[in-house]
Image 1 (cartoon, rainbow, N blue to C red):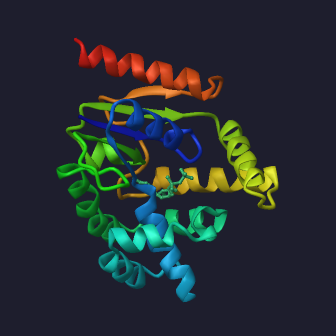
Image 2 (image 1 turned 90 degrees about the horizontal axis):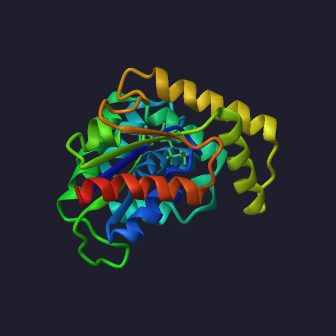
Length: 220
Ligand code: CDP
């Protein structure tokens, strides 16, 4: 079974995807990691994430092992890391290069400990539309920019990072704008996606709703 969860930044995709993967014994792929890894490789090398040629080279050389190594660095989940990711993600050639790596994961999905799993939960922007168009169940998780910025702001504070709500809100809107207006795989729900607006919902409610939809499909 392949489940895709797309949506804008800080909508709660990751939390939901991890819980669903655990409950249904599926592997989990956070596809934002591939773009964060390419963006961070450029930042570390002192190269602008707008440099298309350098981004393509970094994407071509990226392996799963390198991606996981980079993800251990504190900058990986930082605001600067997110902005760099969204810039390289707007480059069509970079997306094309990274597509195969993402699709291959569904062929033999594995848990972080290497255990073979019977399917996967994909979390991203275009996993229901481009990466796994034939997924069994597709969700599009969203929330207002203010709610999402507040969640991200709290996440930074919890990690002990300095954060200003107004700055986080401005960055959230900037990233939404870039992700939705780009020509290559713009952020939008797949035609057959179930849309969940989580603005007034806590994670337990979102999880229960997603399980209800999956169980209805599994036991139909
Ligand atoms: O956690 P958050 O939603 O802030 O970020 P993420 O999922 O790690 O994604 C970082 C950036 O990568 C996004 O702003 C997108 O521009 C890009 N991305 C994408 O284009 N396609 C995906 N399937 C996943 C992420």
